[in-house]
Image (cartoon, rainbow, N blue to C red; front, top):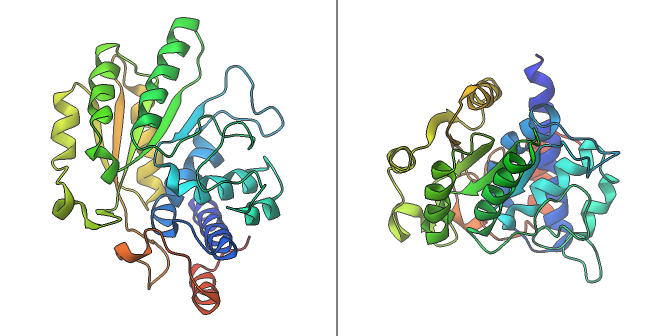
Length: 272
């Protein structure tokens, strides 16, 4: 497996995020950049999907529960061939399809309209249960923000998914440690994440969310686990890849200006 390919693709995805948010003049770059490696691994290797048949019955599904990071999903879908990449630059434009949060009715490849935190995780469990009942081999992947873990619906879903032994459900926590108001631990501490999910009956894996070898290894282990859902706690950096955005909560929901955009793209070294 050529990890360089995935590293280059993730850089391209990140450039797409920067260009889209810059063109919109608003959006959420920090959490989009932290999730780019995970999203790249999903769309470009892990998931059974087909850009020419986005609704094929046995497909794997990805739910972006932290819907404010929509730019990273749009960029990845575009590079994967679901629609022309220039469409992503319509982000947040009046009358456009690419809203600030993903819309399943307007954009090919979007499985769930998300944005209200916690709901994407709950729906992903419902999709996984439906696949079990239907005998559908498709797996369900859901990306959750670490600040999102402060929502009560998260823990109701964790309890339910374990109870129904949804081993076709893989949750990934984008653990970058920051949310809109600062450090998670200063707003509402969610640690220890691993112990909490383990107590609910989940298979728990912890990785570096920017290391593709670890990401793919975790997906392999999740697939091998039977009888319980898997959560992959991925340690990441907010704003990863852009020096002035990294580990800075101020870039949770702020667009770069023209000079910052140029600098960010140069640092990332990708193309979009």
